[in-house]
Length: 317
Image (cartoon, rainbow, N blue to C red; front, side, top):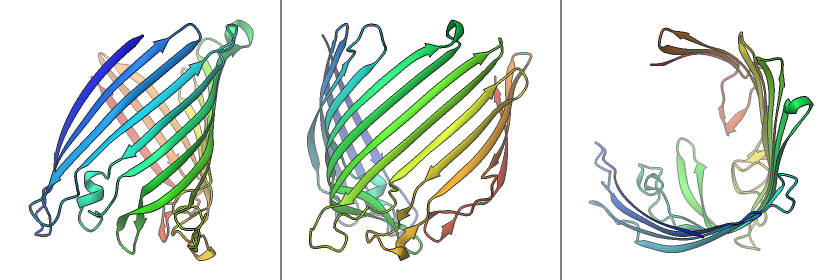
């Protein structure tokens, strides 16, 4: 059995040349006590974290003091000695105080923001192992399902020219994350690596059953998203192909056609080479980003660039 104790203290200020700046100051204290049990097949970790925040401003009213105690518990169990399968479960009482910028940044901040609180539950599996002749292949997979009940969720909503911070009274979130990574060696200097991940997130507003947005997906939160990366390592030029995809989402709480932002898939190819000159290491990398020239929006009415190119030289002495 192991125990740890940690104490962190943060001090933040915000200065600006504009007269509207409130010149806020924040003192943030984080105190954590954690314990860990490590057995042959079972690992249990428990922690208790206290958050205390106090602020003052030269103009206007500061956000109120905040004090919160958050417990957390996680369990990892290896049911079979012969395999690397692990079953994981966890609970955490999440607490997120508004950041300094959330509260005070010019025209974006909102000093009326309330802290975000959540009950977070997770159940997952992990497995990794080798395959093929002499273990030439390696595979790792994780699968997690989760459920969160969130009060006063903090979100950013874009207006015509700027973002504005706001709370959503109560949000129900359920989802699943899957990731798989595989690597295969062939020859002495070649390998192929495939990394994939996919997420499903059902995040809906349940603040008011009489509201028009009851059980509507919250803004800028797609139901599905993911990415895949195929990389070839070799003695000449390392190559990779990346595809990332994001499903449909909505720009406002009301899930109607006029607020819909269509999903997209972005494709990128990359090539890089490492080399040394005397005692200096170099990496030269070139990328073609969005090489299919797909037109899409991340923020409604603000289209992202089409096909673009990037050349990077990194030097390590």
